[in-house]
Length: 112
Length: 112
Image (cartoon, rainbow over all chains, first blue to last red; front, top):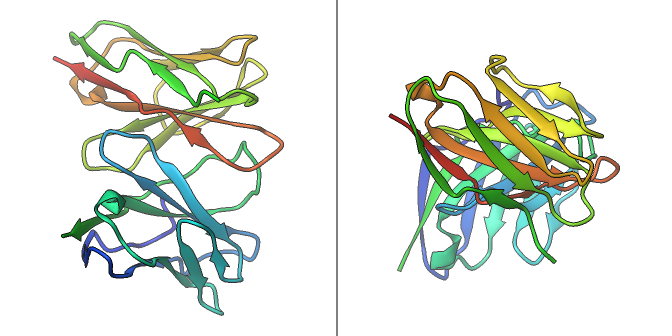
């Protein structure tokens, strides 16, 4: 079972920041927080991950609380192409053989 | 650089039949994982293949089986199809020694 809790859906105006929350209150010290997204009719796509420090890449920023029990994915300037289901995943190993455990994710709708 | 290729893209089968889905991993990847995604749900891990052997398995019956070939490509076989097997089947490839999954766009299986 997924170890994360996310809102079912969210709306965001185009051009504004989209802030997607995730609760992972039972996270262990060696578990990373990963974010993937799935655009309609495509496979999931990696966005970003982090352990305890905030992370930023060309797609998004990840803010992890100090107690690591929750995190927020930030899309700084949402576009219509960011409409997708966003999955927050807690994962123990930094390797290519640890399966991803998906929950139901958050359906983000970016509105013009 | 080709990503993950899955075939066919769509398939319709009758209850009780058998089906084979195919996956070619991203160039340089050596591990293939299969996921089932029912409508409105997140992907669920079926199993993972590395060095031509099943290494990990999710909570799926043995009607679901697979194979990995020397060129790292993989097949997913489902016997005695049920209506509930209707889903999007996703293949993800990775490198066992490094992080990062790349997903294909999936095969949409409909069982009637």
